[in-house]
Image 1 (tube, rainbow, N blue to C red):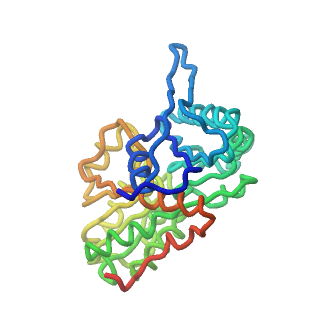
Image 2 (image 1 turned 180 degrees about the horizontal axis):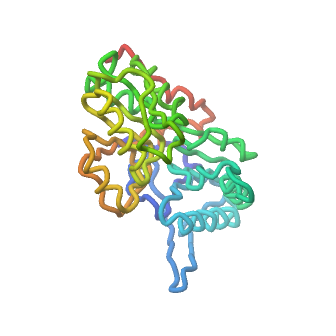
Length: 323
């Protein structure tokens, strides 16, 4: 645990989405979590009472908008309003997982752009800055007219695999769908490993028609994506790379949502290990192969750097020669 942070103008609060992660962030930052009371009435209404003064303080609120998404989003908005009305100096929302980020465009006629709507709601409620972890699409930052710090987890994953000796020419980093090439390339560059892509003859709905662009024969494979929800993308991609001659298959995702049914599906694959961060707390049964990598130190460091007006970019540096 870090020594107590000296700046008394910073206050850290946790709402109900992921208190375990919030406690870790608090420990690394050396800032105790503030006292608040949050409950739901029998009709579903949310009530919040902040049990200490926030007047003149810089407030950081930790809340992932994960399942139940709408409850956690509304709880966050109500907390922001409470801080605003209590004369907080500034309000920063720390969203390790940004729900609705996948709805970032109009993919078909008459569809909303819900990620933009959520951005508008947060700004209207009174947020001054947003800190998040691996946005589904980095352009979501442009939906805000306030600063947004999108923290990247790829260096964390690269360090983990490097320490295990899973790097270099012995492993191929694979994008399980062509939309994830940029993320896969980033990890491949850190690990100094080749890159491959799983593509489909028609589209990714026809998973039985998948094939590998690149060479994975005789190599270990790391499949990387930002969000693991149903597990279908990883299950089909792992079968495709194994058919193409891959040896051990590792899966890594920034956010492990693990919706019902994902555990059974992934347990029945030849995937050796599933690595995710602790950005989301889930109550569903998780696959046997899951390993959690905490993002708490990265988030805590970002909070302190932002509060001290220091750059956040040094947090993403990775020494390739360290290992």
